[in-house]
Amino acid sequence: MSPVSDRYGQEDPLSRRALITGITGQDGSYLAEHLLAQGHEVWGLVRGQANPHVARLRKHVGDVRITTGDLLDQGSLISAVERVQPDEVYNLGAISYVPMSWQQAELTAEVTGMGVLRMLEAIRVVSGISPSRTPGSGQIRFYQASSSEMFGMVRETPQNEKTPFHPRSPYGVAKTYGHYITQNYRESYGMFAVSGILFNHESPRRGAEFVTRKVSLGVARIKLGLAKELRLGNLEARRDWGFAGDYARAMHLMLSQDTPEDFVIGTGETHSVRELVEFAFRTAGLDWRDHVVTDPRYTRPAEVDLLCADPKKAREQLGWEPEVTFEELVTMMVESDLRLLSESARPEDEPFSPDHW
Image (cartoon, rainbow, N blue to C red; front, top):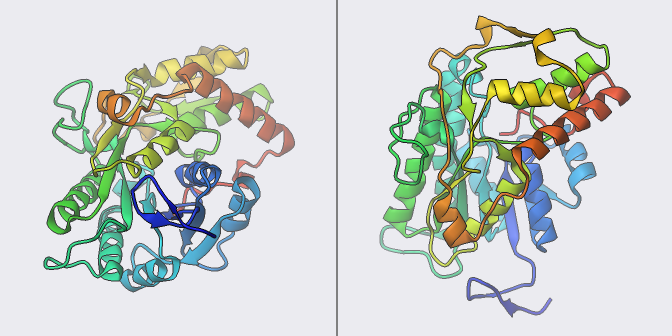
């Protein structure tokens, strides 16, 4: 394959090589699809050769290659980076379900927080970067999946790249560490390392434990006569919800810039859980008030009441805009789960795993 000058100004083969941690999760699957469509060679990092989610991923996403590694194991990450020799690394692997982070706070800190440091160190070691040896133009580019949960108890609305963080969960605290250590490696070693502060992004591939998917599955079960009620926590919390496929495009755009910068990614509009529920049930021809029960067991120890993105920087510098509206997203998810449950009453059969670190 003859080399061509790519957008980074270096001589490279026609296909760039990307390594994705968390590839069997929602975001990893959409990112893999997008990068494959862009002509990338895509590798996924998984925690074992016998991982059952890999075959399902390949069935739905296509030609991805797999290497083993664990965000808890520094040596395995160094070996994976040495083997793959990626141009780009996307660190999406995490324990990403916020309520679980109170139950497994230490593991959340190790995977979601320290895992970022280990991956940055793997890139630094393999690249031979040190305080006295800075990376060249062909260095590995690193993307960290930061989160709007870092804002937590918000100081201002909407939230932008300069809004102070006040995380309200062990997950949010761990993501904040990952965000800052990415910034530190960029400033300390000159690495091309960026963070995307992504607000809530959903899809039919979302894990069944997340509220949007819990609602769409609940609506489908009730519509098909498989259940009569849906139990939820705080209906007044407001979120900036977008489509995960749109946000995967933004990740790639961040690594395609001339200089490394962090970006807030979101739609800029918010909806309450109550609005989500009302629209989802209406999509299926149902009245939510006949079926939804508020259950205090599903409230968080420390609630995040309002998250709303200010995506101005991403719009102006990346040229990024969300393409799927809130209403289209909810309709997509409800219709997908109606099809899924019409074929099988077991949503566990879906292809994308919530355990993707």
